[in-house]
Amino acid sequence: MASDPMIQLKDVRFAYEQGEDDTPQAAEFAIDGVSFNIEKGSFVAIVGSNGSGKSTLAKHMNALLLPTSGEVLVDDLNTVTESQTQPWEIRKRVGMVFQNPDNQLVSSVVEDDVAFGPENIGIEPSEIRRRVDESLQMVGMYEHRKKGPHLLSGGQKQRIAIAGVIAMDPECVVFDEPTAMLDPKGRREIMSIIRKLHSQGRTVVLITHFMEEAAEADRIIIMEHGKVHADGTPAQIFSRDDLGVLALPFAVKMAKRLRQSGIDVPADIVTDEQLADFLCSKEQG
Image (cartoon, rainbow, N blue to C red):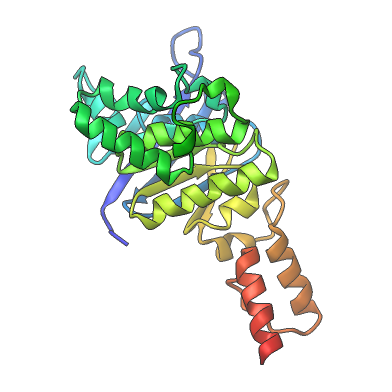
């Protein structure tokens, strides 16, 4: 994995509303003194309860929101700038996928919707055609390219929204609770696409409240009251006793029960696939 930072947050604070003297008070900060780096090529999950600041933090990663104080650097570009073009340069590097795909779909035809982003940044028509086709194939929606988005399921719409972001060819994709409105099948499909994007070398940031999804990341950051509560590998995070309302993934809970029964289950097992592989190896052994 590359060691260069894709995104740097330096003592970031953000308040949606200012006080009477235009100075936000500490209690009003949605993000309160957050500092960390996200390395290029990494897969980072950010979790937390409702109101913890995780979605607000996500919107700072491509300059949709600007910090009240502190700095956010995207590939060394400061999101706070007087340049009119720099925010667009930042958004070319970091694409965002939101919870509700209807908020991202702008056209009445699927392939036109996916082409919208590349057209707006001046990509040549032949290159747009290639990107649209490849993006739709990647998310398994190429056969639906001539349909209207309103005819698709929620999971299919989310895959179209992802294809539109992929067609922009960003180095990093930030997913802001992309599976929250989907059924289990739709969630699995979206997570499969996220894993594929990461395997291609893209930086992935996943905002989620599903700890099973977070377990698939390289690193988990827990937000609480606008601050970083914990930061570590999935194995490190799930070994903690201070996760509060955040539920442990099934595989982690089952592994703990097996250990209590005397079975030596490795501490780094955090996903269903890892647990299944371990149990199969024990059976074969």
